[in-house]
Length: 385
Image (tube, rainbow, N blue to C red):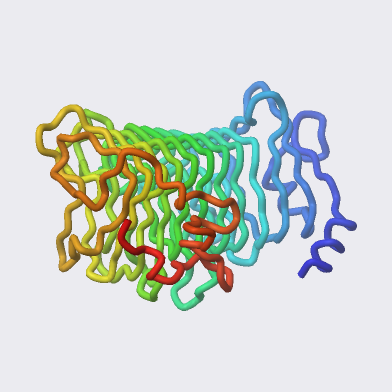
């Protein structure tokens, strides 16, 4: 694979899109591109309109140039997903591995099913979205795997993005800023806010890592981690590390901050809450868990609620157990119902984040990268404080 990539890069071409460039439309440049090529998209005063790009070529980089992100407005186009028509402004199909999309402002993707997206990762591996502003679509970013294929949509990377105010009043609660699935996804250093009707982040991926993000506002949960074919097996984990998460005091939908569990199937894994700052004005729980196979580990979080007398920290339904929650060294406002095992005045120096290796305690990983997936380390590491 490394040799193949080196060969592709050595033979790669640069294709230019814009005024007085070889291509006037991004679609035409993508159709002409070969694996390893870079497509540079130059800004135009009027922007690009009704753009619908279906990517089937591997190892492409599509790069918006200029001081500002290159604007693409999909208003007026039906992103139906029927036949060769994509369901997004940029859709990366399964055969297109290693595609990077960077430097765009994407808005106005709609369809009659109310799930037109700025970007859709359609079971593609190693897809990267960076430095994009994605807003006022039915969905901001959608991704999906393929039942029976454990590696479909693995290694999705969404980094340094602003994803906000996506949704549709025609399907309230069903349209999200991010609606993710497949093998594994990482959200890093991104601002995600103001989902119009649904969740800021909804994920059905086998492993979800949300790190160093600011997630706030919106009309529903901040983060919804639920079931799919990918979550039925063990180690269907999620990790929230070093985020700032705030709830909208005017939210009309679900008011728990994080939901970890299941809707129709099974979720068999653990949720790790590490070094986050979480603020909510609601009595609803910080974490609602409804999977009997689930566990929650909470370390070094700062949890704030100044509006309620007796808010709920954790809630379990559907056969889940409060004994599945453990942690320590969290700073929690005193109005929460007491959870002695989770209280602490100072951070625990044994719990820290090591980039690329996961969360380490006493020099050992709480999360390990194994066979292309993140999995929980040995349970004895989660002993009493």
